[in-house]
Image (cartoon, rainbow, N blue to C red; front, side, top):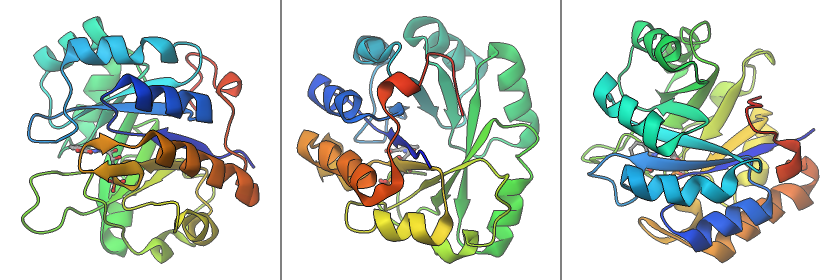
Amino acid sequence: MDIQVKICGLSDDTAVRAALDGGASHIGFIFFPPSPRHVSIEAARALRAPARGRALAVAVTVDADDAQLDEIVSVMEPDVLQLHGKEGPERVRAVKARYGLPVIKACSIRDAGDVDAALAYRSVADRLLLDAKAPAGSKLPGGNGVSFDWGLLATLDEGVDYMLSGGITIGNVDNALSVTHARALDVSSGVESAPGVKDAQLISQFLRTVDERGHGARSPAEVGQGSFS
Ligand SMILES: O=C(O)c1ccccc1NCC(=O)[C@H](O)[C@H](O)COP(=O)(O)O
């Protein structure tokens, strides 16, 4: 089975190249000023350019209004929008209708009730991103490098299209895939040398690990422009 991998929170060319050369299916850019991974819209436009036709570029936003999304969509030209705030199903529906782009809705998980709450977005989002809840005191809704109990997903209906996220590393990715049967992964802190500083070697190693352990990372050629799932 092919596993898609999104390398998130990219902010330099070297890391983008490592992600693309290693076969990442998605590369993510954070538009959230309190984050050490925040990039300007213009910087994201330049960084995502080499991904055209190789991987899908994801714009990650937190409770963004239409004006902010309008600018991101027109300048950066993302392939996918990731809504990582408290957007409700109606807002997800409205964003999809306004831009005609696939939408990933991030949902934070701590217990079985959170999984049920996330499933309410299935009918409006193209894909769910199941992430850990932010630890107390964190300014960031994502990118905290913490995992949730993956066992909560062990019996999830196979038809649920989600990306597994939160605290995934080279050391635990095999277990993450075995426990959850996820078909798509998202990683950020796990391929950094310091908060916000991506490590090209760790990115390559992470993608190789997914590949070598028999899970089969998708090659760039398999991820056509505009193909989402
Ligand atoms: O990464 C951030 O700084 C961030 C800030 C605000 C909203 C979302 C953010 N990240 C979104 C992601 O998709 C991360 O990759 C995801 O939360 C997993 O992060 P990590 O646990 O560090 O692998």
